[in-house]
Image (cartoon, rainbow, N blue to C red; front, side):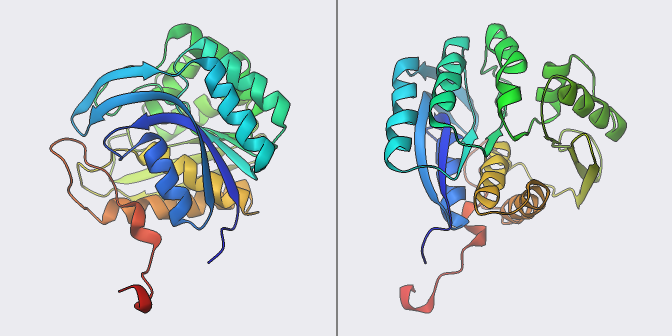
Length: 270
């Protein structure tokens, strides 16, 4: 099988392998594309929480993006953890140089265990500049609340927050509804022309570490292969739900999902 698309991932590393760049690489590979990386930070973490964050020098992040893209041009880019305003500035500079049209931004701000992963100055820059440069932004509810200064308690609140993000310059918004306390999880895709709601039964499990990273990487993979953004969101949601439903039960905290849920091993490899 040959890779269907080339995906550049700009994100932080997760030593436990469930989220961050490790989840991104597994997702892109499992969905049949080729993963390249620019690492923004190294985190020391496991399923119970984040112990420490070691930032990568912003100039080195830019070099990773530009040097990699000069040799192998990405079909699409996924952006994850950008922990400081200096990092965001360096990424914006590099995006201007490499000029890739398909960009998905997952505004990683808070870890599953509650640790804050981004400073206030960086949030401001993300809202004022980076959001306008990307094809789609994929916040969960806490992230959408931070970006729009609103409280989200319902589907209507999600749509209102999405409209505020569109007013900030976002082209398309996909808000994930997993944080709302309901039996049906509603994810909402919004742009200035349409609103689409994806409904799925909530899967009862503690193993949801890395779902946001995985979803945004899956969307990027499908989008990079030529699917529409809306179709990419639909297919990515199915992939994530299948991966959660595998219930692999690793770790003592919020365990990882099964990124291999899309793969069937051929007989010759068994």
